[in-house]
Image (cartoon, rainbow, N blue to C red):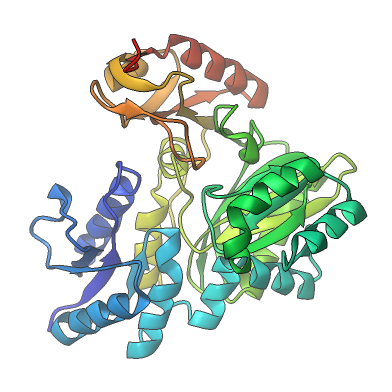
Length: 407
């Protein structure tokens, strides 16, 4: 039987298209067949020609049963979940069939924020103070201890979905009314004020073989009010930024990653202290993967596949200029009547790549997650300040017109 891998792929809004193609191309280069597990009823042109299976990916039992069918037919030697929510089910399926990769115990370090913060503390890494929202009184007492604002978030969420910044008791009562029946799915953290960073990494045999530090241009919790941007930090790192990079390696090893890809987030407080936020055993979301492609010449997901299948592989990344990426957003809602095209964005100075996910006829509604956006672009520049200025130029040039039913 020929060699094969299984890719768990959710073909929604183009977010994982480049990752899927990169994994499949890397596997093909190594003579390995790609098998695809899609959501129930899901179809995607890019999966044509590959053996495909379907399952309700929100049902762990159905997920594992589908993997069992794949194993019976193809005996895949690795499983690649591209989406955050599939990391833990994939780990359970690996254990079912003795497939190398993250175990469920290790995957929980990368999925469950209660687990990951406790494990980080065991490693001596500072995290935000937190509590369980057993009662509204317990949350109010915690908020009085650490000071408002506090953050209420799902312990296994992503992209800031159902995540709330709570500024006072009145706001807490409003949030509690929305989440109290599901309080067991949430955690409460102190709000950490400061600059926000992320590190995107590749590991092989517990060694970091690629890492890139980047700094957000906005507070992630304020995604409804600010465009989401991030800019690489390749040169002249401060002592605190070097500390972030070092802690990232400690966390990945301490959480049990041997070979894989990771996206970790940290805060640098106004007092110069580094605070660990969270980490996922996946390539960065949104447009981080295309930004790394544009700035470093490698696709994180494709490199993850090569590292898993070829023990001698080392990513051939370039250093290049600083590169930033920002989401395309709009304060207008309703049916789109006109929108800038990718080609128009690519004509702008220093824009290296772009994608527009929305088109005329689509309906824009207020975002519910940080990745509820219209698309993204990547541009280059001299440094953080230069790229921030270029972001503004692209935002000013981006055009969206809508009409509502009332109009």
